[in-house]
Length: 157
Length: 98
Image (cartoon, rainbow over all chains, first blue to last red; front, side, top):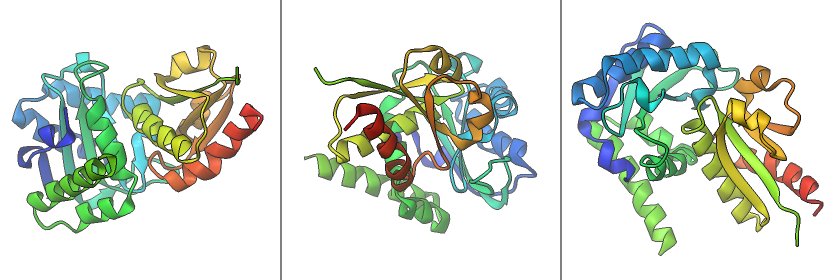
């Protein structure tokens, strides 16, 4: 499963307001609940993950990738992305404040691996993250991911 | 037979952040032409208990890894390959004795 199979206009929201880090997870979770990919209880599980294990899932400066376990209420593999109007702090020592909030839903230990490979590749180039920050439409966000995927595919052939 | 180095990238659950980290470490090792390493993504509990030689983890997990018997490399960013090259490669080379 490729990243662009699950990252669609329906799973992206731009310039969302969030009160704090918990609310940022609720916002990206809400997007995925509306698509039917997760149950509302998955949102609480993602919040509990940060409460229990800490803010390590703020992967890179300004970028958080929230997730919980498949059994916490994932209906299908999904990726949501919310860009916040005002960044929030997760308590990360080096990567706060966060304005790009990603949520991952996995159904097992296998199906999302290619998707995460794509995401790792995307996030490893800061220019890609800047493209997401600059994007004025959801289509531009998707285009940034597509550009990265095409370049990666080109490099392999 | 060259010595094989077992590296664990870790996160709270073993299938999100730790995989992102694994893919980055895989790439950095391959770029540097370092062979003889296996990189496995796992959760915190099994990483501390398992027979790995080296743990790579988020700096934000430092307190949770207190008492780990393995060497641990902490990274500020899970996606920055420059930081991975600078912090992971010297330790890998040292442990491989190369």
